[in-house]
Length: 366
Image 1 (spheres, helix red, strand yellow):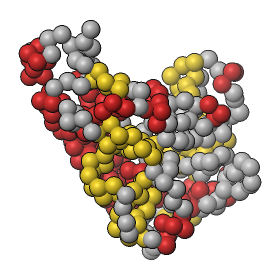
Image 2 (cartoon, one colour):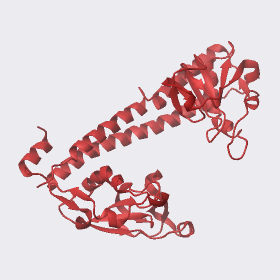
Image 3 (cartoon, one colour):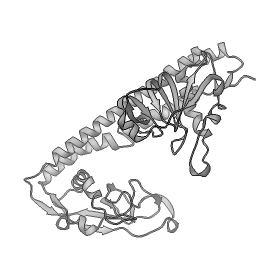
Image 4 (spheres, one colour):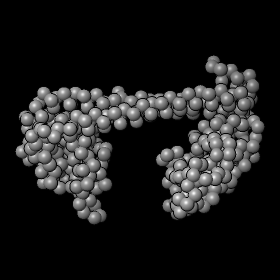
């Protein structure tokens, strides 16, 4: 029996009391702040709104509305029900709610971890605009175990979140390092260049719909960054570079070395003078330029004949091999979901969610 189980047995043998948030918190809402207001009052104190990127921060102003430990949540829009822990001087906009814990029997971070699990369950999606308003939040019931148990749980979950933050920071640093080396390795200004038409060939994908396929384990490349679905047949086997043809990700480059079915995309194969993976890394290095080749209004697309006119530097095969070896290591570290940092982050996140759910499940008193 672990420490928390012992404490629960000793201090809460008959279960834990649950209370409504309205009983233990002062609940309020932010105020309207326009972009012009933020611009005219630029300063040092953060303003949080409905977005989740950058921890919800949309700018900084010269004053603040709150100072101390609080919880905020997004009341409107796609991120409705997202909860944040705040500690310091800040303000929030009118699409954010605010909770100030008034009960001495509650640890703010403990409440944050509890609401991370349950908050989204109370979001309503009426009229196509998800909402979680104060009158609903105040009725949400949360467990209130003794403070010593709350603090022990917070200590455990803090360690998980700190480790995940460290791994994400490491991943970000490695991604920048990868991008730096990729740029450096392709500074080949003195190298002879040849067009893709001279160095390989372009194949078009085959039109197919999901209704026309049988489910299987072969990725169907439809135009996005990830396979659209999986079927039981392929139209290409072995190494291939695929460039998405249309849609928001038109021009996106991916590398495959397995049976695939390409539908809304181009398949590029290379001659013996160019290593396929070398070409892939070169094209990834000019990914933004490929995206800028998009044409058309409603559904943008890239043209295969324009892609095949791209001039590619052709170093000796030994140099191509060296470049591929170096970049393969970075690619595996920053992108491999089975072995690299993303795999480690995913595993830690799963561990955190498992222990969080286990630690925050309490028997309620009769």
